[in-house]
Length: 313
Image (cartoon, rainbow, N blue to C red; front, top):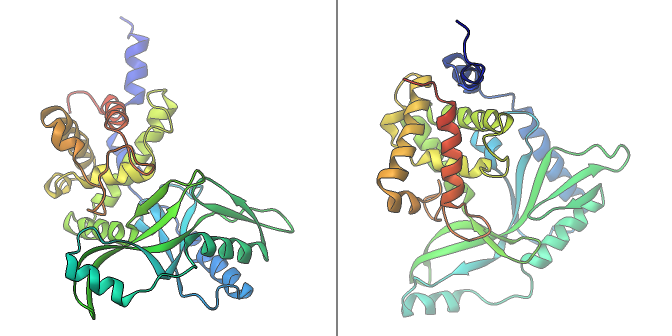
């Protein structure tokens, strides 16, 4: 008796325990220090930003140790720290007065800082502008530096300003995409929360995120998923919502636990699923903003993962 070819194809698609263990391993991270050094040297060489306080730091999958391949770019943020963008909606009248008394308006902001950053980079590299970030290439060889560089300005989400000397806020980043849409994110909180969850789960959380990203590749290769449906950032945020206890198991079991827990959540509590927040704990995961996901896209991604799980396990 011969086997059904369709059954054989589906069997080949399934993710084995051995693949999960292999996919969980982090790749080499040499690019982290090298690309950051390239950016810092270019900005210092120019001198255009000497009069402005700024900070350079990593964000994204490399910074969070959830990257799965060396072909991924390193995400680097150049953030102007003063002046800043702010949200003071939560301040009471006294707090708002303290804010106004302490800080003055200035002509220099994100647009001017971005132009200075790009001009600084152009003194050493060819600069290509994208929707949200820029990348740079060496003038001589036109070899691309494997980094996405995002010029931003500090963003402060205020919760209190009780005295002129004491302010309480969450620090984020603010920038605009090519169409002018404002984007606010909180990469430092994302990094901090992810590291804390990884410790609580016996270092399984980030490993399982890497597995999920590799599983996405399998799903795309098998025509189960469009590659644009599930960006890396959203995958990490989605798996962050899985309870810690589901990760405290051998890696293959932990991955299956996480996928099935997410599936149960969207089916049994669709309102709770739709109300999930990003890993930073401050921004809604789903919505119509330029840096948010849709519930439908997340559901399509989960369906693809479920199709790759071994049957009966």
